[in-house]
Image 1 (cartoon, helix red, strand yellow):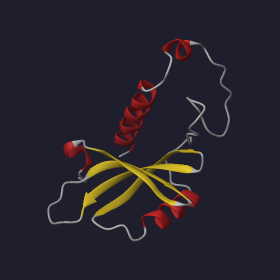
Image 2: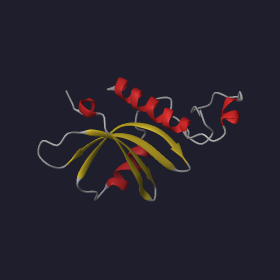
Image 3: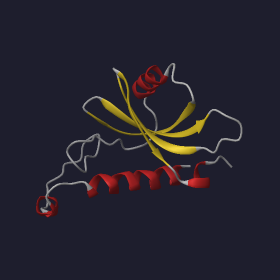
Image 4: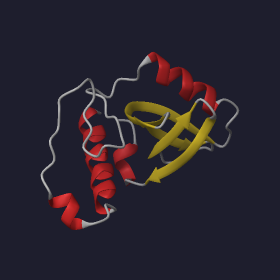
Length: 127
C-alpha cells in the first residue's frame, strides 16, 4: 500500500512540476533548509510521512460528512497549502461491483475544496 501511495505521490509531483512557469527559473539552484516539512516548491508543505495527523483526519471527516454517491477511504496525507489539505483516498462509487480508484481530495476548515480522480485500473482494488 505504501508503494502505491509513493507512486501516486511521485506522479502528482511530476504533474505539479510540469506546470511550472519559466523553465529558466526552475533550473536555477535554490537553497533549501531542512525543516519539519519538506518544500520542493515553496507553496506546498509536505509531511515526512503520509500518516494522517489527527487535525487532518478531523478536517477530512467534517468536509466529507453528508457526501453521497462515492465512498472516500483516506490512505495518506500528502501536504498542506494555505490551509488546504491534500489527502490521497481510495474511492469507490456506491453501487454493486463498483471498481475502486484513487482520488486526491482537497479539504479545509471551510469544507470540501476539490476532488481529482486518478484512474489506475486494478491497482486501486484491495487484495
